[in-house]
Length: 167
Image (cartoon, rainbow, N blue to C red; front, side, top):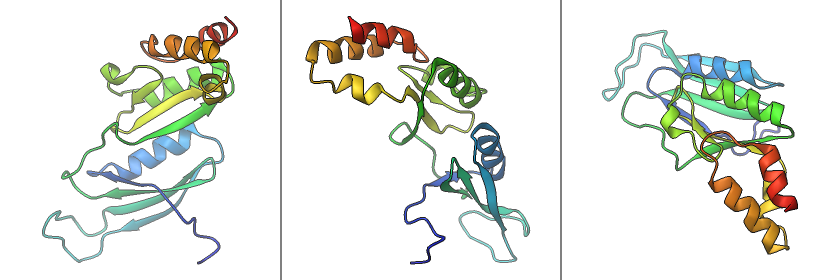
């Protein structure tokens, strides 16, 4: 395998917003960039006719993780069945990613730290230590955190989870 190619890369299917979405995402995350844009040639696809020169795929990195965005047409849509988790070290990070990723998204889809962005992609903006808290061998601590988490109406309040954890 080519050492410069990541073995597994998420591929995001957009109608025709691949470049806009990639530019949006790289503006939010550090160590992020668009690495390649491919355009349609003169070939035509009977399922999704496009003009020559329009964007077909955009390869980009977020925090060093490779992604591909495809302008594949309107046949498929994003669902919550797949989401990207953003692990945050502080409430400031939670607030930042929540605001940036949630901007223009469906506010009805914001619950328990989950949100849908303006392109319909689902994200989980969570504390980096959430998994440790909810899997703690002290079941009382873990259950208090889970209860606090499930009562969260939109973005996560790190202090509330930490207080639940401490009892």
